[in-house]
Length: 360
Image (cartoon, rainbow, N blue to C red; front, side, top):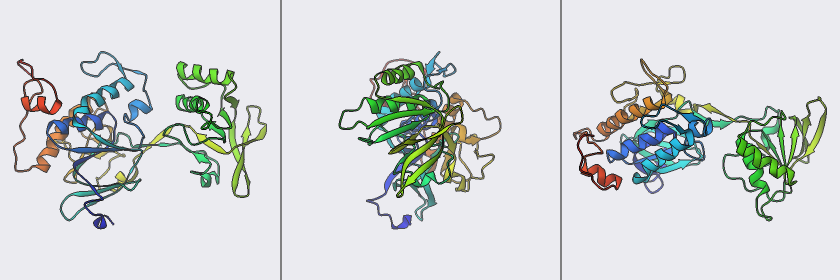
């Protein structure tokens, strides 16, 4: 299939980074310092990985040089640091295909149909691609994409519909308030939030905004769980909701938006022939290469003797992996070690004015 892709259709670059978490972002920066072009693919519609999905506002205290930062701040800093290299990110898509081309490069495809021809692949997928947890209701998945949604993007596309949101975290509440605040032409006919408990699992800020929308009558809140659905003429006309007292009633809906959290899945990467060990990729500790020449792995996805799953450890791995990638791409060239403090070449790449100082 990939042999039929023309050079005008494929995206050609030196390296493809799988994962836009802290490891993936810092990997792109380290490659940039070595003048290696890269693209980044991530299943989430935004950069940040676990930092944004699991603890965006929780404190992190062990990043070198930063006594304190949140996950969101760390990702923001990494994106700012990476900006001079103008990273190209392909978000909201998963890797779906991987094979070696006759010319020695890799052909990598994604779930949206994008095709990359690359010299190296760096897997920085953490514990896997985050995918939405699904409703455990038999038969309901056939409405997915029509009336059943697991949203990751912006809150739009439900004008004039009766919308039921399922969940109680920040994302669910933010979606509810965003839909309620939409312009009249884009606003749903009704908005309801269903959560299994009357205690929401959201931040104070998100909860305050949501309660204000409820008080204004823009959103309604119910406690219960979906146990089934009512189908009429091939359309989901309502869902069956069981309340805390065990009573079940139908709730008319045009669209159901599910926010039950995300769970990581390694996906097709497990089938690349990397000799996985407990869902992790074995690597050497010189250049963090895998058993497949040209494929590297950094961050939580890899394993080696003494491995510690820390962000600061991943940063160290990225630096060494960058030199490994450079050696693979330019085997006949000596890769110099340069310091950002003193190297005029790096100053040019970073777009900063050179400073007169010793050390690194």
